[in-house]
Amino acid sequence: MLALNFLGLAVGLSLAAILLSIAYKLFRLNRFEAKKSASRVKGISDAIMGRARTRDDWLPDGRIKGGMIFNRRDNRIEVCGRLSDEAFDRIFR
Image 1 (cartoon, rainbow, N blue to C red):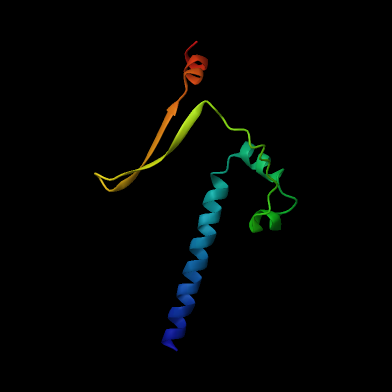
Image 2: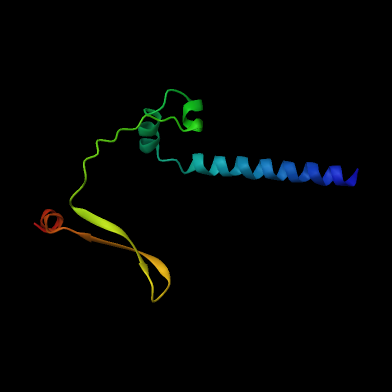
């Protein structure tokens, strides 16, 4: 009987933590981004199941080039990137 009480307590605390997490995310919601995201789905079930309509035009952005490299000396993956001269011209003109 005592194990059943602990199991019920664990389930209740897990459910409370999940609901608090959802409430916190809704509290910190950016309304503009939420409206943009809501226009991509037909209903709440599509949003939950990950069936959002996306657009991919396969046009590469030549202003930013980046990637990842493996640093053998430090034995870790590092992110590297650079901006093109065209990007600098747009920013600093």
